[in-house]
Image (cartoon, rainbow, N blue to C red; front, side, top):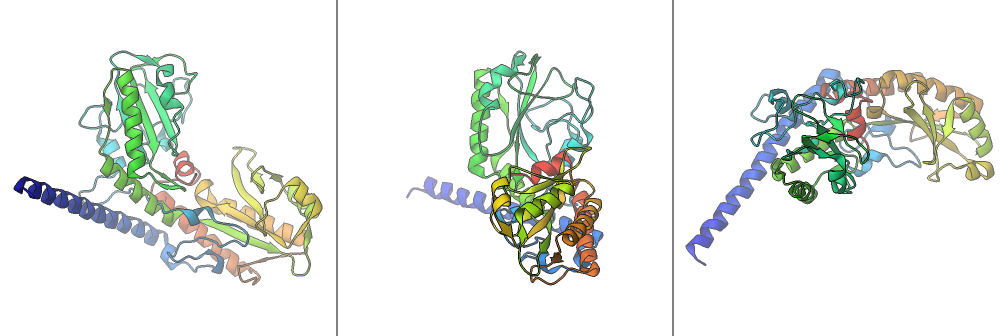
Length: 395
């Protein structure tokens, strides 16, 4: 082995160790930040309900017959820290409106503060550097959305959006295959984490190659961030969101016997629920069209019109997905009252995982968990029910 080979091997080892140390330091800083947010919201002092604790001290209700979505993923968020780690929003705050090779991140307001779109509507979709990996293209001449067809139809296993704008300082417009007009600047935005997990390094590499191929066809350069840094950021975002991913379940059981499916459906629909394609009943807000909470089968078998018509069930589970609803405490109060009324109508009771009846004290303890989780989400700048929250807690 030559001395040159030895030097190259040594240099490679040093680089790998440096990356590992950097990632570990970054993770610790972000972890301290989110733990501080939980302390400020009083979460650590909350009484944990029996059906909402996990090995990681998360509020993850174990619902009979229901597999919580957050059981299959690990999450995180990048929050500001006093050290030298610069979180995405800090980068976003300091950038200029033009994209340069030294700073790939696009100048844009967070999703909760989106700029007025070309049609004058507020809250138009915008790139979100805090949760998306953004690659910028500046073609030599304006291009139509059709020139990006390969990217618009790409399937990488991760939400991917394309935006264009007609000039520096103008609003970004979400691009679709039928979008009219031409754009002098284009960006690709890939979500870094959702309930399926963090974007991996191989996935990021594939994403960069895809965008680079499209840029080559436009005779444009692609301005991309460092893949290793983005992979570390994705894992950090994934881990922190895992601590904030909370689903609350109230189980309704018939003490003796079972509930006829036709009876359950009649009571549920009279209470405002509608049978959805996903095998559950959804309670949908008339104002926003958003699902506020759902009613699922106590058994693993999903609800359907045929099943409800011909079978019985020992009970059902009311489920509130805290990060995905605006005003989670108000929605929980509504769900709790409705659950009590339905339980009375069906001669059933609300119980925990050990089939112990839920009294008002236990229900109030769950309410406090919802409140503290909502506060921690806001501290992490992930407003419950916002576009950002729906992206991070989807998949």
